[in-house]
Amino acid sequence: MTHAVELPVENTDARPSALRALPQRCKLCGVEQDAAPVAICEHCLGPLEPLYSPDRRLPSRATIESRATSLWRYREWLPFDWSGVADDALPDVLSPDTGFTPLVHAPRLAERLGVARAWIKNDAVSHPTLSFKDRVVSTAINAARSFGLDTVGCASTGNLANAVAAHAARAAMQAWIFIPEDLEEGKVIGTLVYGPNLVRVRGHYDDVNRLCAQLADRFGWGIVNVNLRGYYGEGSKTMAFEIAEQLGWRLPDAVLAPMAGGSLLTKLRRGFSEFAEAGLVEGELPRMYGAQAEGCAPIVRLFESGGAALVPETPHTIARSIAIGNPADGAFAVKAMRDSRGSAQKVSDEALVEGIRVLAQTTGIFTETAGGVTVAAALALAANGHFRRGDEIVLCITGNGLKTTDAVRDALPAAPLVNAKVREVAALVAERDGGGPGLGARR
Ligand SMILES: *Cc1c(COP(=O)(O)O)cnc(C)c1O
Ligand SMILES: [Zn+2]
Image 1 (cartoon, rainbow, N blue to C red):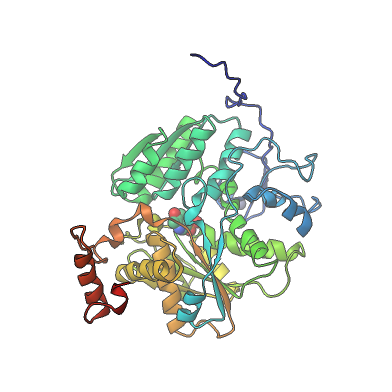
Image 2: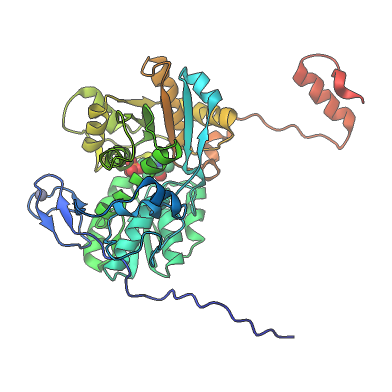
Protein backbone atom coordinates (compact mmCIF):
# COMPACT_ATOMS: atom_id res chain seq x y z
CA MET A 1 0.00 0.00 0.00
CA THR A 2 1.33 3.40 -0.87
CA HIS A 3 0.51 6.69 0.72
CA ALA A 4 0.74 9.95 -1.09
CA VAL A 5 2.05 12.18 1.64
CA GLU A 6 2.45 15.87 1.04
CA LEU A 7 5.54 16.95 2.90
CA PRO A 8 6.15 20.61 3.50
CA VAL A 9 8.94 21.60 1.18
CA GLU A 10 11.96 22.80 3.09
CA ASN A 11 14.12 24.95 0.93
CA THR A 12 17.68 23.99 1.82
CA ASP A 13 19.54 24.82 -1.36
CA ALA A 14 21.69 27.92 -1.58
CA ARG A 15 19.02 30.46 -0.77
CA PRO A 16 19.41 34.13 -1.38
CA SER A 17 20.59 35.46 1.92
CA ALA A 18 17.93 36.92 4.12
CA LEU A 19 20.56 38.41 6.41
CA ARG A 20 23.18 41.00 5.60
CA ALA A 21 26.38 40.84 7.68
CA LEU A 22 27.50 44.12 9.24
CA PRO A 23 30.70 45.89 8.20
CA GLN A 24 33.69 45.59 10.53
CA ARG A 25 36.14 47.87 12.29
CA CYS A 26 39.69 47.22 13.49
CA LYS A 27 39.85 46.81 17.25
CA LEU A 28 43.33 48.39 17.33
CA CYS A 29 43.49 51.19 14.74
CA GLY A 30 39.76 51.79 14.17
CA VAL A 31 39.85 51.55 10.36
CA GLU A 32 36.50 50.43 8.92
CA GLN A 33 36.07 47.68 6.39
CA ASP A 34 33.08 46.52 4.31
CA ALA A 35 31.43 43.29 5.34
CA ALA A 36 33.64 40.45 4.08
CA PRO A 37 35.11 37.10 5.13
CA VAL A 38 38.18 38.83 6.51
CA ALA A 39 39.24 38.92 10.16
CA ILE A 40 42.52 40.87 10.12
CA CYS A 41 43.01 44.60 9.52
CA GLU A 42 44.98 45.20 6.34
CA HIS A 43 46.66 48.25 7.88
CA CYS A 44 47.84 47.03 11.28
CA LEU A 45 46.96 43.29 11.35
CA GLY A 46 44.67 43.92 14.34
CA PRO A 47 41.46 41.89 14.76
CA LEU A 48 38.29 43.15 13.03
CA GLU A 49 34.97 43.33 14.88
CA PRO A 50 31.44 43.93 13.58
CA LEU A 51 30.45 47.57 13.63
CA TYR A 52 26.97 48.19 15.03
CA SER A 53 25.03 51.31 14.21
CA PRO A 54 24.74 53.35 17.42
CA ASP A 55 21.24 54.51 16.35
CA ARG A 56 19.77 51.09 15.71
CA ARG A 57 16.55 50.45 17.61
CA LEU A 58 17.06 48.27 20.69
CA PRO A 59 14.32 46.07 22.12
CA SER A 60 12.80 46.34 25.61
CA ARG A 61 12.86 43.51 28.15
CA ALA A 62 9.25 42.72 27.23
CA THR A 63 10.02 42.52 23.51
CA ILE A 64 12.92 40.18 24.13
CA GLU A 65 10.79 38.02 26.42
CA SER A 66 8.10 37.75 23.74
CA ARG A 67 10.50 36.18 21.26
CA ALA A 68 11.37 32.51 20.75
CA THR A 69 13.80 31.04 23.29
CA SER A 70 16.94 30.94 21.19
CA LEU A 71 20.00 33.16 21.00
CA TRP A 72 18.30 35.09 18.18
CA ARG A 73 16.04 36.80 20.74
CA TYR A 74 19.07 39.11 21.25
CA ARG A 75 19.49 39.69 17.53
CA GLU A 76 20.05 43.45 17.79
CA TRP A 77 23.43 42.59 19.34
CA LEU A 78 24.27 40.01 16.65
CA PRO A 79 26.24 41.09 13.57
CA PHE A 80 23.54 41.44 10.92
CA ASP A 81 21.34 44.20 9.59
CA TRP A 82 17.85 43.80 11.09
CA SER A 83 16.31 46.99 9.73
CA GLY A 84 12.91 46.32 8.24
CA VAL A 85 12.41 43.08 10.18
CA ALA A 86 9.35 43.08 12.45
CA ASP A 87 9.99 42.78 16.21
CA ASP A 88 8.33 39.42 16.56
CA ALA A 89 9.37 37.86 13.23
CA LEU A 90 12.51 35.81 12.76
CA PRO A 91 13.62 36.00 9.16
CA ASP A 92 15.29 33.19 7.34
CA VAL A 93 18.25 32.50 9.64
CA LEU A 94 20.33 29.34 9.64
CA SER A 95 20.61 27.51 12.97
CA PRO A 96 17.54 29.18 14.48
CA ASP A 97 17.32 26.85 17.50
CA THR A 98 20.61 27.33 19.34
CA GLY A 99 20.87 29.06 22.71
CA PHE A 100 18.76 29.68 25.80
CA THR A 101 20.30 26.81 27.73
CA PRO A 102 19.25 26.32 31.38
CA LEU A 103 20.62 28.44 34.22
CA VAL A 104 20.63 25.88 37.01
CA HIS A 105 20.54 26.89 40.67
CA ALA A 106 23.36 25.09 42.53
CA PRO A 107 22.95 25.55 46.30
CA ARG A 108 25.17 22.60 47.23
CA LEU A 109 28.00 23.95 45.10
CA ALA A 110 27.44 27.45 46.60
CA GLU A 111 27.95 25.92 50.02
CA ARG A 112 31.20 24.28 48.91
CA LEU A 113 32.38 27.63 47.56
CA GLY A 114 31.25 29.64 50.60
CA VAL A 115 29.10 32.05 48.60
CA ALA A 116 25.46 33.13 48.93
CA ARG A 117 24.25 31.65 45.65
CA ALA A 118 25.71 29.83 42.65
CA TRP A 119 24.29 28.89 39.27
CA ILE A 120 25.51 26.74 36.41
CA LYS A 121 25.01 28.16 32.92
CA ASN A 122 24.59 24.77 31.35
CA ASP A 123 25.87 24.71 27.78
CA ALA A 124 26.60 21.01 28.30
CA VAL A 125 23.07 20.67 26.87
CA SER A 126 23.48 23.18 24.05
CA HIS A 127 21.53 22.40 20.88
CA PRO A 128 22.59 20.60 18.77
CA THR A 129 26.15 19.52 19.69
CA LEU A 130 26.32 19.88 23.48
CA SER A 131 28.87 22.66 23.78
CA PHE A 132 28.88 26.46 23.70
CA LYS A 133 30.47 26.29 20.23
CA ASP A 134 26.94 26.01 18.82
CA ARG A 135 26.57 29.71 19.65
CA VAL A 136 29.59 30.91 17.69
CA VAL A 137 28.82 28.68 14.73
CA SER A 138 25.25 29.99 14.62
CA THR A 139 26.45 33.50 13.92
CA ALA A 140 29.42 32.52 11.73
CA ILE A 141 27.40 30.27 9.42
CA ASN A 142 24.93 33.05 8.73
CA ALA A 143 27.84 35.35 7.90
CA ALA A 144 29.18 32.68 5.53
CA ARG A 145 25.84 32.50 3.76
CA SER A 146 25.55 36.26 3.56
CA PHE A 147 28.87 36.24 1.68
CA GLY A 148 27.58 33.59 -0.70
CA LEU A 149 30.04 30.94 0.53
CA ASP A 150 28.97 27.32 0.14
CA THR A 151 31.79 25.80 2.21
CA VAL A 152 32.56 26.40 5.87
CA GLY A 153 35.33 25.00 8.00
CA CYS A 154 37.31 25.37 11.19
CA ALA A 155 40.50 24.65 13.04
CA SER A 156 39.20 22.88 16.12
CA THR A 157 40.15 21.41 19.47
CA GLY A 158 37.05 19.19 19.21
CA ASN A 159 33.82 20.92 20.10
CA LEU A 160 34.01 23.39 17.25
CA ALA A 161 34.47 20.47 14.85
CA ASN A 162 31.24 18.92 16.15
CA ALA A 163 29.37 22.20 15.82
CA VAL A 164 30.59 23.18 12.34
CA ALA A 165 29.83 19.69 11.02
CA ALA A 166 26.30 19.68 12.45
CA HIS A 167 25.32 23.22 11.50
CA ALA A 168 26.74 22.82 7.99
CA ALA A 169 24.83 19.57 7.51
CA ARG A 170 21.55 21.20 8.44
CA ALA A 171 22.28 24.13 6.13
CA ALA A 172 23.26 21.82 3.25
CA MET A 173 26.71 23.42 3.13
CA GLN A 174 30.04 21.68 2.59
CA ALA A 175 32.38 21.43 5.58
CA TRP A 176 36.16 21.09 5.77
CA ILE A 177 37.24 20.48 9.34
CA PHE A 178 40.79 20.30 10.68
CA ILE A 179 41.75 18.88 14.07
CA PRO A 180 44.95 17.92 15.90
CA GLU A 181 45.78 14.23 15.59
CA ASP A 182 45.24 13.30 19.26
CA LEU A 183 41.60 14.28 19.83
CA GLU A 184 39.26 12.17 21.96
CA GLU A 185 37.21 9.54 20.11
CA GLY A 186 33.96 11.13 21.28
CA LYS A 187 34.87 14.35 19.51
CA VAL A 188 35.95 12.57 16.31
CA ILE A 189 32.84 10.36 16.08
CA GLY A 190 30.66 13.32 17.02
CA THR A 191 32.03 15.10 13.95
CA LEU A 192 32.21 12.30 11.39
CA VAL A 193 28.59 11.33 11.88
CA TYR A 194 27.48 14.54 10.15
CA GLY A 195 29.42 13.65 6.99
CA PRO A 196 31.93 16.52 6.72
CA ASN A 197 35.43 16.36 5.27
CA LEU A 198 37.38 15.77 8.47
CA VAL A 199 41.16 15.99 8.36
CA ARG A 200 43.54 15.10 11.22
CA VAL A 201 46.70 17.19 11.20
CA ARG A 202 50.02 16.12 12.72
CA GLY A 203 50.84 18.61 15.44
CA HIS A 204 49.03 20.78 17.97
CA TYR A 205 46.08 23.11 17.57
CA ASP A 206 48.33 26.02 16.75
CA ASP A 207 49.73 24.14 13.74
CA VAL A 208 46.17 23.37 12.61
CA ASN A 209 45.18 27.00 12.98
CA ARG A 210 48.14 28.24 10.93
CA LEU A 211 47.27 25.77 8.17
CA CYS A 212 43.65 26.93 8.14
CA ALA A 213 44.63 30.57 7.72
CA GLN A 214 46.40 29.55 4.50
CA LEU A 215 43.55 27.32 3.32
CA ALA A 216 40.90 30.01 3.74
CA ASP A 217 42.70 32.21 1.21
CA ARG A 218 43.59 29.38 -1.14
CA PHE A 219 40.09 27.86 -1.46
CA GLY A 220 37.79 30.74 -0.56
CA TRP A 221 36.24 28.90 2.36
CA GLY A 222 34.54 30.45 5.34
CA ILE A 223 36.70 29.18 8.19
CA VAL A 224 34.52 30.16 11.12
CA ASN A 225 37.29 30.90 13.62
CA VAL A 226 39.78 32.24 11.09
CA ASN A 227 38.46 34.54 8.36
CA LEU A 228 34.93 34.69 9.88
CA ARG A 229 36.30 35.17 13.41
CA GLY A 230 34.83 38.65 13.87
CA TYR A 231 31.32 37.30 13.25
CA TYR A 232 31.97 34.06 15.16
CA GLY A 233 32.98 35.79 18.39
CA GLU A 234 29.70 37.68 18.64
CA GLY A 235 27.79 34.46 19.30
CA SER A 236 29.55 34.10 22.65
CA LYS A 237 27.94 37.29 23.98
CA THR A 238 24.56 35.56 24.06
CA MET A 239 25.71 33.48 27.02
CA ALA A 240 26.00 36.72 29.02
CA PHE A 241 22.65 38.02 27.76
CA GLU A 242 20.93 34.80 28.82
CA ILE A 243 22.54 34.83 32.27
CA ALA A 244 21.28 38.39 32.86
CA GLU A 245 17.76 37.63 31.63
CA GLN A 246 17.50 34.30 33.44
CA LEU A 247 18.55 35.93 36.73
CA GLY A 248 15.52 38.20 36.29
CA TRP A 249 17.34 41.01 34.46
CA ARG A 250 20.14 41.25 37.01
CA LEU A 251 23.90 40.86 36.94
CA PRO A 252 25.74 38.33 39.11
CA ASP A 253 28.74 39.43 41.20
CA ALA A 254 31.18 37.04 39.55
CA VAL A 255 31.32 34.85 36.44
CA LEU A 256 33.78 32.01 35.75
CA ALA A 257 34.58 30.58 32.35
CA PRO A 258 37.25 28.37 30.80
CA MET A 259 39.65 29.97 28.33
CA ALA A 260 41.08 28.48 25.13
CA GLY A 261 41.63 31.29 22.63
CA GLY A 262 40.23 33.71 25.22
CA SER A 263 37.28 34.76 23.05
CA LEU A 264 34.44 33.50 25.28
CA LEU A 265 35.68 35.29 28.39
CA THR A 266 36.27 38.53 26.47
CA LYS A 267 32.82 38.39 24.88
CA LEU A 268 31.03 37.55 28.11
CA ARG A 269 32.25 40.83 29.56
CA ARG A 270 31.27 42.64 26.37
CA GLY A 271 27.79 41.10 26.57
CA PHE A 272 27.24 42.23 30.15
CA SER A 273 28.41 45.74 29.35
CA GLU A 274 26.21 45.98 26.24
CA PHE A 275 23.15 45.05 28.31
CA ALA A 276 24.13 47.63 30.95
CA GLU A 277 24.60 50.31 28.25
CA ALA A 278 21.17 49.46 26.84
CA GLY A 279 19.64 49.99 30.30
CA LEU A 280 18.39 46.40 30.46
CA VAL A 281 20.36 45.72 33.67
CA GLU A 282 21.84 47.94 36.38
CA GLY A 283 24.72 47.91 38.80
CA GLU A 284 28.34 46.77 38.72
CA LEU A 285 29.51 44.53 35.93
CA PRO A 286 30.50 41.06 37.18
CA ARG A 287 34.06 40.23 38.15
CA MET A 288 35.36 37.91 35.43
CA TYR A 289 37.43 34.83 36.32
CA GLY A 290 39.16 32.81 33.60
CA ALA A 291 40.32 29.20 34.05
CA GLN A 292 42.93 27.12 32.24
CA ALA A 293 44.69 23.81 32.79
CA GLU A 294 48.27 24.10 34.13
CA GLY A 295 49.54 22.15 31.12
CA CYS A 296 48.36 24.96 28.82
CA ALA A 297 47.86 28.21 30.70
CA PRO A 298 49.42 31.03 28.65
CA ILE A 299 46.57 33.44 29.47
CA VAL A 300 46.70 32.75 33.22
CA ARG A 301 50.48 33.18 33.19
CA LEU A 302 50.16 36.49 31.34
CA PHE A 303 47.63 37.65 33.96
CA GLU A 304 49.92 36.57 36.80
CA SER A 305 53.00 38.19 35.28
CA GLY A 306 51.31 41.58 35.12
CA GLY A 307 52.94 42.04 31.73
CA ALA A 308 51.58 42.66 28.25
CA ALA A 309 53.24 40.05 26.04
CA LEU A 310 51.80 36.55 25.94
CA VAL A 311 54.32 33.70 25.84
CA PRO A 312 53.03 30.81 23.69
CA GLU A 313 53.17 27.29 25.15
CA THR A 314 53.12 23.73 23.89
CA PRO A 315 50.04 22.05 25.44
CA HIS A 316 50.34 19.08 27.80
CA THR A 317 46.93 18.47 29.38
CA ILE A 318 43.92 16.20 29.11
CA ALA A 319 41.77 19.34 28.78
CA ARG A 320 42.17 19.18 25.01
CA SER A 321 39.15 21.32 24.18
CA ILE A 322 40.89 24.35 25.71
CA ALA A 323 44.50 23.45 24.82
CA ILE A 324 45.48 26.45 22.70
CA GLY A 325 49.12 27.40 23.20
CA ASN A 326 49.00 30.71 21.30
CA PRO A 327 45.55 32.16 22.04
CA ALA A 328 44.34 34.84 19.62
CA ASP A 329 42.34 36.75 22.24
CA GLY A 330 44.63 36.10 25.21
CA ALA A 331 45.53 39.74 25.81
CA PHE A 332 41.87 40.81 25.55
CA ALA A 333 40.84 38.15 28.06
CA VAL A 334 43.50 39.39 30.48
CA LYS A 335 42.19 42.92 30.07
CA ALA A 336 38.62 41.74 30.77
CA MET A 337 39.77 40.06 33.99
CA ARG A 338 41.86 43.06 35.11
CA ASP A 339 39.25 45.71 34.24
CA SER A 340 36.52 43.78 36.07
CA ARG A 341 38.72 43.17 39.16
CA GLY A 342 38.50 39.43 38.62
CA SER A 343 41.34 36.97 38.37
CA ALA A 344 42.80 34.01 36.51
CA GLN A 345 43.32 30.51 37.84
CA LYS A 346 45.13 27.44 36.54
CA VAL A 347 44.51 23.92 37.83
CA SER A 348 46.20 20.53 37.50
CA ASP A 349 44.75 17.68 35.45
CA GLU A 350 44.14 15.83 38.72
CA ALA A 351 42.17 18.77 40.08
CA LEU A 352 40.10 19.05 36.91
CA VAL A 353 39.06 15.41 37.13
CA GLU A 354 37.99 16.07 40.72
CA GLY A 355 36.17 19.17 39.45
CA ILE A 356 34.15 17.03 37.04
CA ARG A 357 33.12 14.77 39.94
CA VAL A 358 32.28 17.64 42.29
CA LEU A 359 29.99 19.21 39.68
CA ALA A 360 28.27 15.92 38.90
CA GLN A 361 27.82 15.03 42.56
CA THR A 362 26.53 18.44 43.69
CA THR A 363 24.43 19.49 40.69
CA GLY A 364 23.70 16.43 38.55
CA ILE A 365 25.52 17.95 35.58
CA PHE A 366 28.18 15.91 33.77
CA THR A 367 30.71 18.16 32.10
CA GLU A 368 33.78 17.54 30.00
CA THR A 369 37.38 18.41 30.94
CA ALA A 370 36.94 22.15 30.29
CA GLY A 371 34.07 22.21 32.79
CA GLY A 372 36.22 20.32 35.26
CA VAL A 373 38.83 23.07 34.87
CA THR A 374 36.17 25.69 35.61
CA VAL A 375 34.88 23.96 38.74
CA ALA A 376 38.39 23.20 40.02
CA ALA A 377 39.33 26.84 39.42
CA ALA A 378 36.25 27.94 41.38
CA LEU A 379 37.28 25.74 44.31
CA ALA A 380 40.84 27.11 44.20
CA LEU A 381 39.66 30.73 43.95
CA ALA A 382 37.30 30.16 46.88
CA ALA A 383 40.12 28.68 48.96
CA ASN A 384 42.26 31.71 48.14
CA GLY A 385 39.63 34.19 49.31
CA HIS A 386 38.51 35.59 45.94
CA PHE A 387 34.80 35.27 46.73
CA ARG A 388 32.76 37.05 49.40
CA ARG A 389 30.08 35.49 51.59
CA GLY A 390 27.35 37.48 49.90
CA ASP A 391 28.49 36.79 46.34
CA GLU A 392 26.17 35.47 43.65
CA ILE A 393 28.29 33.63 41.11
CA VAL A 394 27.74 31.90 37.79
CA LEU A 395 29.92 29.09 36.44
CA CYS A 396 29.83 28.75 32.66
CA ILE A 397 29.87 25.04 31.92
CA THR A 398 30.72 24.88 28.25
CA GLY A 399 30.76 21.23 27.24
CA ASN A 400 29.35 17.76 27.86
CA GLY A 401 31.06 14.98 29.83
CA LEU A 402 29.86 12.18 27.57
CA LYS A 403 32.38 13.39 24.97
CA THR A 404 35.40 12.87 27.25
CA THR A 405 34.58 9.82 29.36
CA ASP A 406 38.22 8.66 29.25
CA ALA A 407 39.16 11.59 31.46
CA VAL A 408 37.20 10.27 34.45
CA ARG A 409 37.10 6.54 33.84
CA ASP A 410 40.10 5.74 36.04
CA ALA A 411 38.92 8.03 38.83
CA LEU A 412 35.61 6.23 39.29
CA PRO A 413 34.97 3.00 41.22
CA ALA A 414 34.14 -0.15 39.29
CA ALA A 415 30.49 -1.20 39.53
CA PRO A 416 30.04 -4.52 41.32
CA LEU A 417 28.54 -7.41 39.35
CA VAL A 418 26.01 -9.66 41.09
CA ASN A 419 23.71 -12.54 40.32
CA ALA A 420 20.04 -11.55 40.29
CA LYS A 421 19.65 -12.43 43.99
CA VAL A 422 18.33 -10.16 46.74
CA ARG A 423 20.85 -11.74 49.08
CA GLU A 424 23.78 -10.48 47.03
CA VAL A 425 22.42 -6.94 46.89
CA ALA A 426 21.72 -7.07 50.62
CA ALA A 427 25.39 -7.84 51.15
CA LEU A 428 26.34 -4.77 49.10
CA VAL A 429 23.91 -2.58 51.06
CA ALA A 430 25.34 -3.88 54.34
CA GLU A 431 28.85 -3.17 53.14
CA ARG A 432 27.84 0.33 52.03
CA ASP A 433 26.21 1.05 55.41
CA GLY A 434 29.26 -0.32 57.19
CA GLY A 435 27.25 -2.72 59.40
CA GLY A 436 25.08 -5.83 59.34
CA PRO A 437 22.04 -6.24 57.10
CA GLY A 438 20.19 -2.91 56.99
CA LEU A 439 17.09 -2.40 59.11
CA GLY A 440 14.95 -1.61 56.12
CA ALA A 441 15.99 -4.80 54.40
CA ARG A 442 12.76 -6.63 55.13
CA ARG A 443 9.29 -5.31 54.72
C1 LIG B 1 36.28 26.36 22.74
C2 LIG B 1 35.91 26.07 24.15
C3 LIG B 1 36.08 27.01 25.19
C4 LIG B 1 36.72 28.36 25.11
O1 LIG B 1 36.86 28.93 23.93
P1 LIG B 1 37.56 30.33 23.62
O2 LIG B 1 38.47 30.00 22.47
O3 LIG B 1 38.31 30.80 24.83
O4 LIG B 1 36.45 31.22 23.24
C5 LIG B 1 35.63 26.64 26.44
N1 LIG B 1 35.07 25.44 26.67
C6 LIG B 1 34.90 24.53 25.72
C7 LIG B 1 34.29 23.23 26.08
C8 LIG B 1 35.31 24.81 24.42
O5 LIG B 1 35.14 23.87 23.48
ZN1 LIG C 1 44.01 48.13 12.21
